[in-house]
Length: 203
Image 1: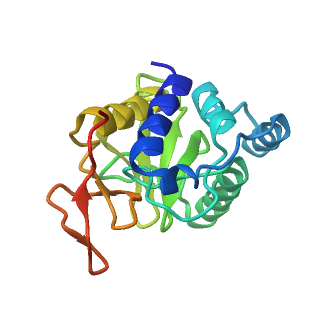
Image 2 (image 1 turned 60 degrees about the vertical axis):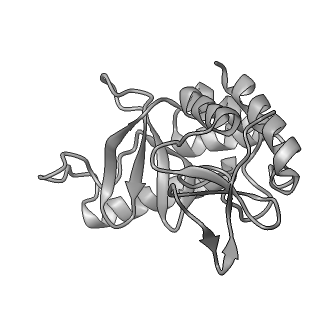
């Protein structure tokens, strides 16, 4: 399923069950937004990510709309990328960790979502893992042990879970008391003293 089709399904579910969350999805990125990101990366934005940004250029406010972190705008992607490149240069963060084999950061990682310094990245390094998603954790570096699929299938997995139930990775969708989408561990019952309820399936 294409990125566009996955987003359509996610939007349809939100329109029915979490309209306040739907309202937080930003308008599409412009060609100038994508070109500016390309200039920072010094290579073309991955096609699936560019397609996603052309659908929604991040969020207009803070929200927990995705299982792992909040989707970033093109500008925020560029800022996160530049920050990680600068830090990695200062701390030898491009060198592989002897235990995990992954560096703290790699120039071929493109952040897609971020939360508290951790980023869900698209891995563009050559090889069998090209295009997969993984976490770049600010305290530990690259982590691809969860075996996330490429971006298109990841968005499709979110749409499937909203429509039919289940989890994405270790996260299950819930609704807050304000009918906003919230992802948490299965069995979650509350958020800041208020109850969570399992997100309804698409009917």
